[in-house]
Length: 63
Image 1: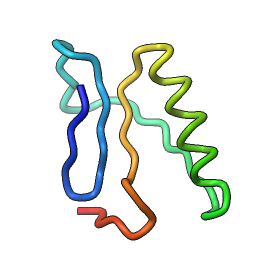
Image 2: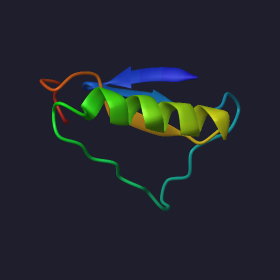
Image 3: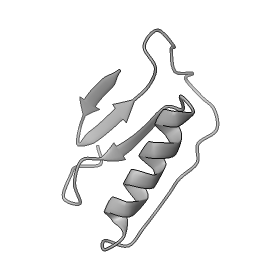
Image 4: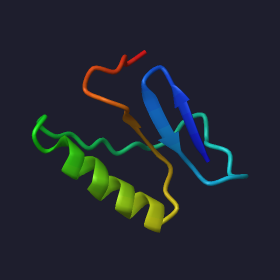
């Protein structure tokens, strides 16, 4: 399932509720590597059915 809120795009499996609290792993990158990092995380997380979110663009709101 894909949802969008406040500049964030979230992806998670249909029918699997997200916990209110839990572990998070943060990935960061410089502007010139951001697309590569998002693509790498996307590939890994979708392959392993791991929920994740990312900012739509460098200018997206973080609220």
